[in-house]
Length: 66
Image 1 (cartoon, rainbow, N blue to C red):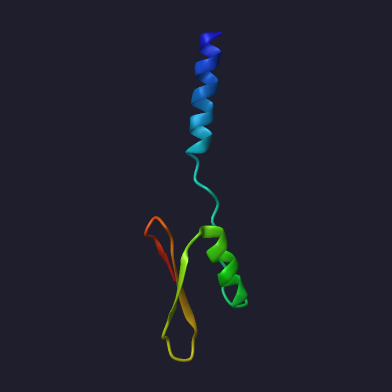
Image 2: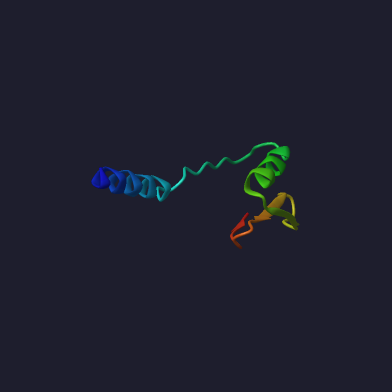
């Protein structure tokens, strides 16, 4: 019984440690940035880039997504 408990606990910890899937797309609508910001709980900063509109998302962890 104790071995089963340890096996299940280890399995749960391993599953939580798996990397999450990532998705990326180019050329989407500008409103997709807002949905990404809400999903990732980040801050949006527009960047001057000439003819192309760029935006950065800064995540709470400090990661910056451009």
